[in-house]
Length: 139
Image (tube, rainbow, N blue to C red; front, side):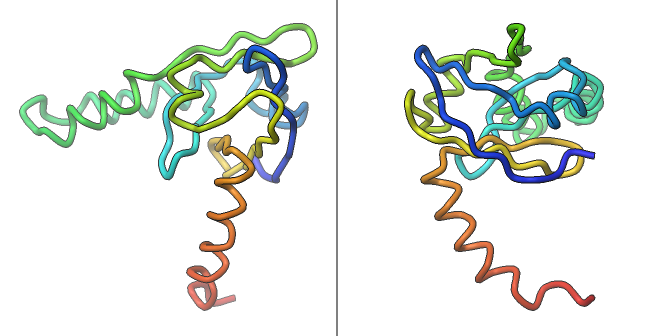
């Protein structure tokens, strides 16, 4: 299961290392795409196929279906890793996420997918989540 929070630095040319535990769970078959709230989503190719099937099963005449397909599929890229588990973030995803070389990013495992955030955005979002989530779970 994809869980945990991992912080790494972005190298030159937008190269970043996917933490080993996440890479093992994703099995080196990763698709990266635009995510929500300024994050990126990383999923296995199997999860990607299921997601796309769900999107494409919606009616073509529905503008929300078309917009979802554009948002997720239009910016999606299959990720290729080097021998050290690093990959280059494609420019459209860099622009969407605000990630910059030399800065810290955060990988957040969320069960079936991983989000990649600029550390600055993640820290702000995490603060909001703490305020919003309090009291929403009954344990």
